[in-house]
Image 1 (tube, rainbow, N blue to C red):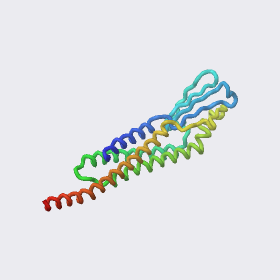
Image 2: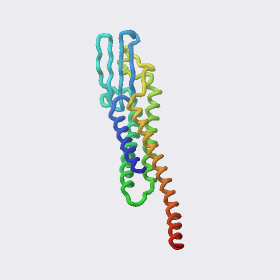
Image 3: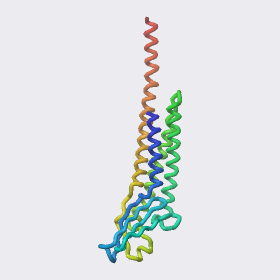
Image 4: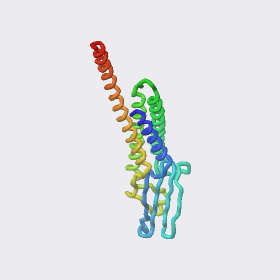
Length: 212
């Protein structure tokens, strides 16, 4: 059961890395208030970069969004807080992965506490990252992901933004880490039961031998 959490931790690592590396934390649509029927826009971005496609009725124009260029729609505290907590969760997942491998290879039963702490940290920091991003989403991004220049050109994205796949990958990693902890607790309970039953069984066998 403990070795199964090794794969769960590997899954957490893959999900967190994928969420950090993809550009679909938010997906939104846009239109021009001055020309809503012929204009259209598509915006997708991750924690660090993304892209924006705008059609003014005479063809699509692609614009890159990035932290470095200062064109990212999210505020600094939001992407910094989210990324920092995901980095800690990633490190905790790596630690849980190593501990699960070592615990499975050990000849003696190891304490489950370090594994529980690592997986608990993954759950805690992924939930923290989700909380920070959801705060930014509901306070700002849900209402506007356009630049000041776009707003001046009567573009709007009000109430068209949705949480993208990248965000839900973090949710999945949190669930995987929680399942890991459930498996660890079940394995620890089974181990305690085995330790209780084994001496009693050995005592009965020894008594039967003496009687024989």
